Length: 177
View 1 (cartoon, rainbow, N blue to C red):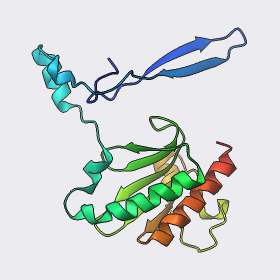
View 2 (view 1 turned 60 degrees about the vertical axis):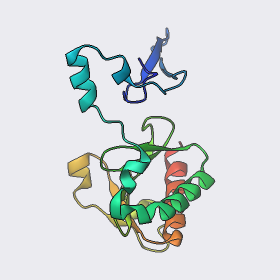
View 3 (view 1 turned 180 degrees about the vertical axis):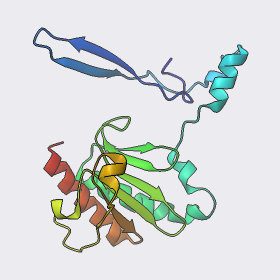
View 4 (view 1 turned 90 degrees about the vertical axis):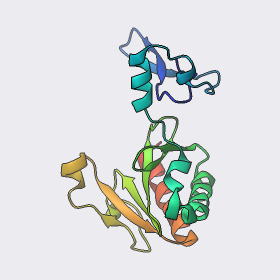
């Protein structure tokens, strides 16, 4: 079930130990290359799979946003340089950068625009990190609306991308990830 490239499912093995500890271990697919459409003969299965969309990074760089791909690569390189565990997690409205697979410990949510990025940093206010360039802006209603503090950073240059990586590193260190 998890070897299909167009089904966004994850399987986990769950182990409960005597001391009430629970361990979750994701079962990795052998390779996710086949499409479920090739095996869908039932109308209900076809209807459901037609509605399920698995997003890619490329989906975020269509049309006028294509010009932002180079800056995106600079940001991705800067993030991986500060911590090689960073993984992309593309979703419908953003690209998450997380430590681990499938959104675990998402450090920033990147919103792609035609001329810039907005990076939302989860779990922080500007005062929680060393924002020495004073570029972070706190979303005033974030705690009430999203149940977490969110600070944003506008990224328009490679220097901004490197600064985003510096902030991300501080968050990783602060949270102990």
